[in-house]
Amino acid sequence: MKKSLLACLMASLALPQVCADTPSHMPQEAVLYHNATLLDPATEQQLNDGWLLVKDGRIVQMGQQQADASLPAVAKQIDLQQQYVLPGLIDVHLHLTAGPHRVEMQDGKPVLTMQGHSQITRYHALSTLATGVTTAFSPAGEPEANAEYARQQQAGNWPGPKFSYAGFVFEPTPILGGSVHPKDEAGWQAEIASQKALGVQYIKLYQGLTKDEVAMGVRLAKAAGLKTLAHLDNVSWQYAADLGIDALTHALPTSSELLTGEGKTAYLAERNIPHSARFIYSWFKHVDYDSAPMQQLFDTLARQQTHVDLTLVVNELVYFARELDSLYPEQDMWVYHPQMRKRWRATLAAPSYDWTAEELATAQQQMPKVQQLFKRLYDAGVPLAIGTDSVASGPFYLRELQLSQGAGLTNWQVLQLATAGGARHLGLSDTGQLAEGFAADFIVLTANPLTDLKALNTVHTVVQQGKAWQVDELKAQLSMLADIEL
Image (cartoon, rainbow, N blue to C red; front, side, top):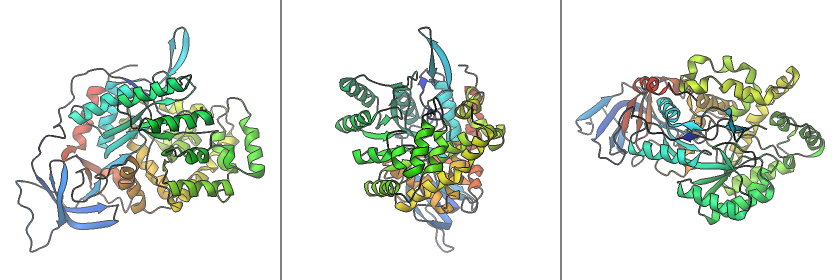
C-alpha cells in the first residue's frame, strides 16, 4: 500500500551553525516597507501604493500612501518599487525532518526506514523558506527530531518555517523511526504521553488501523488534551468524522463504505488483488459524489468543520510517476537535498510498478475526479488548506496551488487557502493576513500571483516575524549542508 510520500524522520546531530538569526523574542528596530502592491487574500483586497510598518515581529501599522500625506517617520525604510507583497505561505503537510526512503538491516532483517539527519533537515528548512513558506506543520515524524527542529528554529539557529508537528504514526506496518503500534490500551496511553511530552499537537492515526483502534486513538488523544488527524483507507472518513476526528489528510478516502451499488461490488473485487495499489485510482473510478454516503460525508465534515488537506499533488505524482522527469525537471529540484534527489522518483514509481499502460492511462484519467472531490468539499464549506506531503515545499507547493485552481477556484481563493486558510487549519489567529497586529510574515515578488500563480517563483525576499531574508542568500547556504551521505 502507498505510504505517506515522505514521512518519518531524523537523528538530530549538532552541527556548526550555517548562520545566526536574531531570536524572534529579541527586540527589532522598526522597518517601513513602502511603495508596494499589498495583496491580502483573506479580504481579497489589492492595495496599490501600500506600506507596512514592522516592529518586533509584528505589522504595527499599514496604509496607502497619499500624495499629500507623509509616511511614518522611521530610520529604516525599504522602497519596494511597486512590487507585490503577499502573506507568507503555509504548508500544512510538510515532513520536514524525513530522510529518503530506504531499506536497512536490523537484527538480520530488512526494515523500511525514512530516518533523516539534522543536516538534511536544515537543508530542506532553508530551501522551503527560500520558496516563501514561512509556517509549516508536520503531520507525522520522529517526535524528537521534530522537537529539535522546532527548538532550533525558534531560537534563531536554523532558518526555516515556523513549525508545529505530530509524532510517530500509529500504524501496524513497522517503519524505522516512523511508526508505532502498541499492543494494548496501556501501551497507547504511554506512547501518547511520550509524544505529548515532546511537544506534539496531534496524534496521527494511519491507514492500517482497525475501526476499534481508530476509535481508541481519538478517545485517548482527547483525554490527553491532544487533537487527532488521520490518513485512512478501509476505515471510512465518515466513521472517523462521527468519532469527532479533528483533521483528515490526503485525497484518498478509499473506503468501500463510501461507494454504492455495482461500483462498490467492483471495487471490493479489485481490493482482493494481493499487494496491489490500484485502489489509489480505482476508488475514484467508482465513486458517485451525489450518492447518499458521499452527501452525508460532505454534510458531516462541513457541519463539524473537520479540517482537510487533500495533497492533490500526491495523486498526480503516483498517477504520472513515469513522467516525473518532465513534470519536475532537475533544475527545479534544488529544493531537495542531494540524498533525496537520488531516490525520490524511483520511490514514487513503486506503487505503480506492475500497472499496465492501460491501467496507467485509467489512473491518469481519474485526476479530474480527484479535483472534483476538492471542489465538492470546498463548496460544502469544509475547511481546506494547502499541503505537499513532501520534505521541502518548492515546486510541489506551486503545483498543489495549480491543481486547486484547476478544480475551479480563483487565484484569490487558492491564495486564501495558502495563507489565511493554512493559519485557520493550524489554529493560528495572528498569522496569514496583511493586517495590523498580525505576525510580520510576508513575501515580496516581482510578479502578480493574481495574474499567474507561477509568479510565486519570483519571490526574492522573505520576511518572517520581522526578519528579512534574501532568497539568494538562503540558497547560497545550501551547499554547506549538501555533503552528508546516508
